[in-house]
Length: 219
Image (cartoon, rainbow, N blue to C red):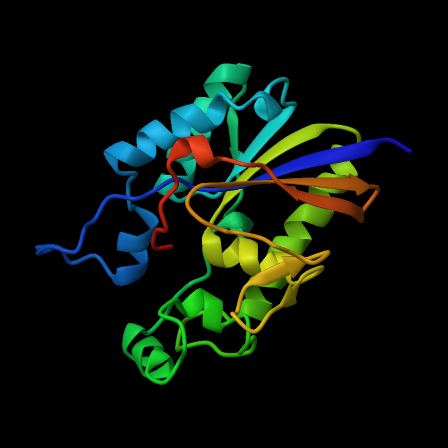
């Protein structure tokens, strides 16, 4: 049985848009339309030059702007179109006031980290870690069946990637994901090489992207 390789990528750094917004768009729409920073564009270009991402068979991305912008360089280098699936989108944050209340007494400043511990928590119109994990898993089960033996790039988001990885990872005392005693660093960007045989995970390897001068970034 052939092995299928999935390169699971978190999008690159986004631009800071915390200024005045004279817009009627709701927070969800603003989140979906966030763009990459100048540095994020540079990160994405250098990411695409990683030798692991040569000879890719198919590329899937979230339909969020920042994910598509990260995927476009890999698509260009491999002469492939970008396929979009809403199951790869970031979890819906929902009511931001409720999310702020949830975070008041938490040890980290990252809601997606805390939702690794409180997997059923969600705000009004938001998604829980479990909701997100289920739709991500549904997507991956489908592509593992359709593209067995292929090399697949999947570009998604920090929270969604973390919640999907709960299928195989533990959460340590620092609220980090651990696979086979190795902490996975889901920064922007990150590159995880996941090897499957049929739909069974064989290994997760974090590809070193030190040369990209990675910086921690918001979702």
